Image 1 (spheres, protein in one colour):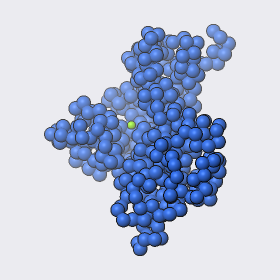
Image 2 (cartoon, rainbow, N blue to C red):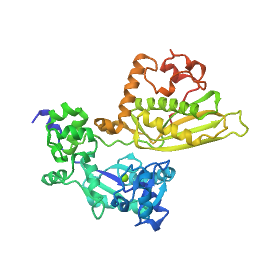
Image 3 (cartoon, rainbow, N blue to C red):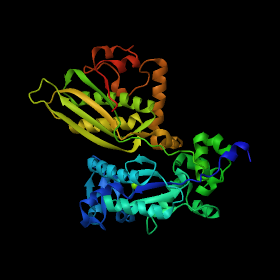
Image 4 (cartoon, rainbow, N blue to C red):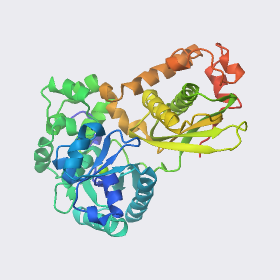
Length: 428
Ligand SMILES: [Mg+2]
């Protein structure tokens, strides 16, 4: 054994991934107990796609992310109750669930709106997991799956399996039984293995989580880098992604500007929010974070009789740092808010539900999943190196009447752009 490997022993301490079951559906059911055993789906903000399914709907073969128009008639025929998303409600319920989890463990990491990693008190295991599950269910009404293991990647697999157990709790087995446990998972179900990496692994005959755990370190590192290697070690129970306590709920990134002349047409409005989404996206990537939601706020100018301020918030699911996806959400919101005849004096784009991009970097192997993220990073580098907007969305090229005068100057440096007095950053 390589001397450095001697340090890489499986962790003695355990952590638990607590994952709310069908979270958005479970939230809706809190207020509709009559739907407890009934099929339910929740749609994305503009009723575009299915983002949460009850088990009954999963059994019908409806997939996550399925466009609603494709399944609408099936859902109607089968008597499925359909909800538009109510993100405020889900956040509120999430805060309550997380507060209970934090109370039950010495250290916890809120990982997403419906997932948290908890440190398992020493000597505890599945019975403790059952206590956690029962407490959360009793105090919030939300059912959880609890997966227990020495490392996050193993815990994620355990929580997937836990969904099929009677009590919703499963500890990844140790020793020889771990091989059987890992052998039952296709490699693509391992956290962080995307389609692209799956293809790469197939060429080396690696098709299950067990094969991946047993893969040679040098091969994995050469082909998939240190992040790939960490993933393999995590499958061996070596903790490479530590528990991080962090505040995610209150942080946000905002880009806003008062227009030089009032904006009256939807095209200019879309251009403006595109620019703000790009500015906010750059800051997001610089901080190494992903955004889980985006809000556009429009303020009508002083030129209009009735002053008004309206917002539209969209869930970005899964969380992203891709300009392409942020722009899409921002322009959809702008179109949704736009009212004919209004004079808009100011627009804001706010990114919130921020989470660390570090674990999600695993999905860099998965260009088909978020190619926009890679593209955005390339743009950041080129723009920083050339000191100007070398790469930017075509919609932003040319002169724009709504921009402050200085911004029309083609030689303006990005650094200056950020510190123009009308551009406001706000980290809360
Ligand atoms: Mg969940």
